[in-house]
Image 1 (cartoon, rainbow, N blue to C red):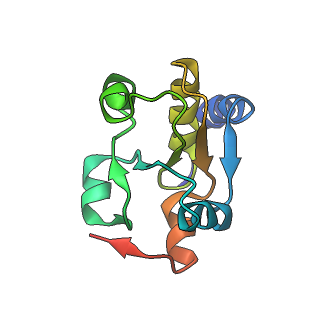
Image 2 (cartoon, one colour):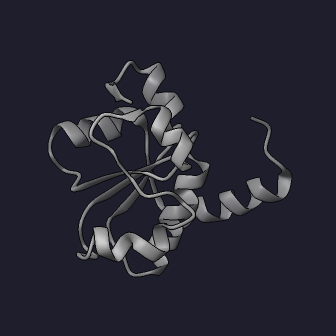
Length: 122
């Protein structure tokens, strides 16, 4: 997908403020049990089609509204992903501004997860 320059600049600024990890690092952290909340921030229809195994869904459009219900502990480890790593970086930035201290965005998103052959669900 081709992204507009203004969007890419916005994402770049968010990425400068948040923690990111590769898909390999994300899978290793999940396998070691270091992630309390693995969250897909894509749209409802994207999540319904398929998603990473054991991921929970909280779309970017509602994450700020609903995160405190799903994750009341602001120190809990949260790993976010989207389609390619842009929306999850924006969501990670928002959660950090809300006081969450252990949020990471998975660079490459679900595309990188699929390419790595990691487990999927639908």
